[in-house]
Length: 342
Image (cartoon, rainbow, N blue to C red):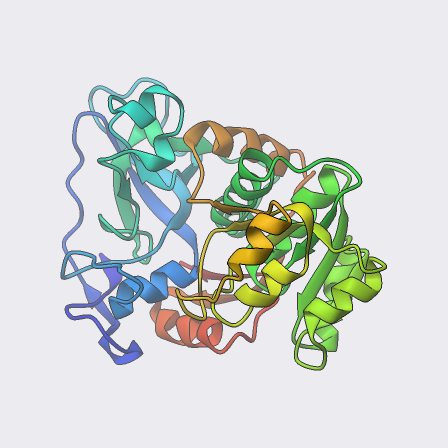
């Protein structure tokens, strides 16, 4: 089969469109003919070997494959060849303390699709049938592949970690990113007042279309000062943080007393200055948020299937042009999701 594979970590030039062996199907596995696969910054970190991500080599990336079942293992009973499916984000052990309490996103033996094991930048992928989700007939493969990471992550951040409530002020950073697009929709679903930041007028207009109540161009304005103007010097209850170094200090400063900063990433760097005085004086909570549990994904998937949450597709690239797709994402040209298609 054809796949995008890299044999060493580093730049885009290491991504090769090449022939690789077809995966072998085990008794409990499903072989999926991939029609679309979402692209994420984690795919870039995996290729670079940056941000502490070290995939086995050679490697095929791709976190969010969607397609049709091409073959089933002998023990699989719940699926049929031809079923339209989304591949779940990870394989977990089901036995550790975190799996036992429903927090399998923290499973000690968790294997992430496209990071720890081969992913979806290929014509086929083989995974345990137990991690598959059905794609509704009315949903395209592209929309399916664009949904899980962003909406699952945003849900875990805002609902499970920050315990968002109706009427609260929420600051969503980088509204043009796919997780930013999802964050706006999740926050509005729970009745929050959303302030969104982005770098261009076009992205800000699209954020307003998604439901953002106020928008800030962070290139032209100090977003901390703009937040205070919008909220009459009150500050926000929740900051949806995934940018990192360049926003961290001002994100904390933008919080109302008893506010919560919830973070799932650090695309601009992993280190940020923290005003410890502000943290204790205002009783601020800083909350880490890692991925999402399988139960959360099932809940979110129902809302996506019902079109309560809707992915925004920026552009689709052919599989052979995955390097160009990653360059496009690195250059932050997108609003919403970039997808690779077969």
